[in-house]
Image 1 (spheres, one colour):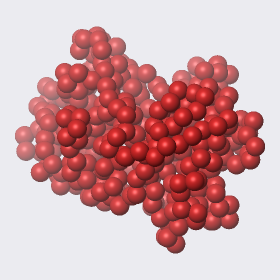
Image 2 (image 1 turned 135 degrees about the vertical axis):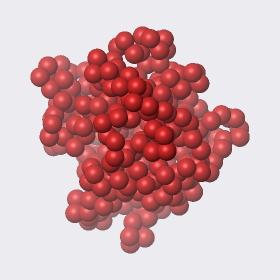
Image 3 (image 1 turned 120 degrees about the vertical axis):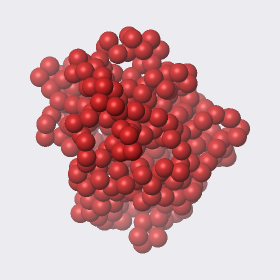
Image 4 (image 1 turned 180 degrees about the vertical axis):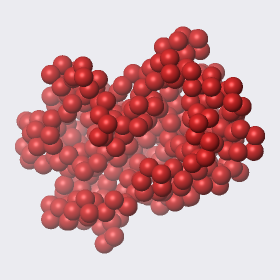
Length: 362
């Protein structure tokens, strides 16, 4: 298989429903110090383009990330063959010292359509172990060089809500407990409104509380403020919304939602340690659903969930909360590495495994 890349400007990327392959996302990452590149992609499969992000490791060597791209890909049986050919073409445009290319694939997980990997008890996708996944991904390649990344850059499993029906229909599809909690929050005086970047410090305080409570590493404040620095004048459209849930003067929860194409994506969220009995997060997401639907968007991606109903999974809490909104579980193929410098790559992977404080580069 041959894949040809032709360089293009990052502001000339095609419109897409994939936030992480948009003009907006490329501009945000530039502001955070990443180098960005974009290419038109020509292959035996549908043509498109791809946004590529580059940063350097602690030793100054480049590492390359393709966030949820390319948007268009082959049939599952040719995933590895395509990525091998794409990597070969991309290296012509990369620094010779680049350690590896990491693809965060938006393509459907090849196991998602196989009933063998679905269980009624777990209500989700049971993926095989990493070695078997690597065996399948590399089948038919010449180099057998694709490796499953230690973690998925953005979201391998998410819950997506169809906004094309009426508010009443969307609400009726939710689980009874979710509908009850939405109404409970409203009865207890929770109010959700769109806010502005001026209140980002309030959100960031909530975010730090949430990180401490759920034991995950935090991003710096700049990761949030940079989202509000860019306006795509060419497209003349909104890229970001910022919601806060309040009762009186108390801020209870918040969310940052980004737009691309016909989709809205729940990008960051946070909630207070106080007044959790007010169910503010339920009112927050219901208002987000109503607002983005009114803006004309067709899908609301609520973000990460566990792939199954597994209490041992770190995303189980998000699964339990989000599944009540009755969206569709989407299983993507996740992140895969194509090493270019094997020794340096192994060293990089070892550091990833040892350090839980590394920011996941979405």
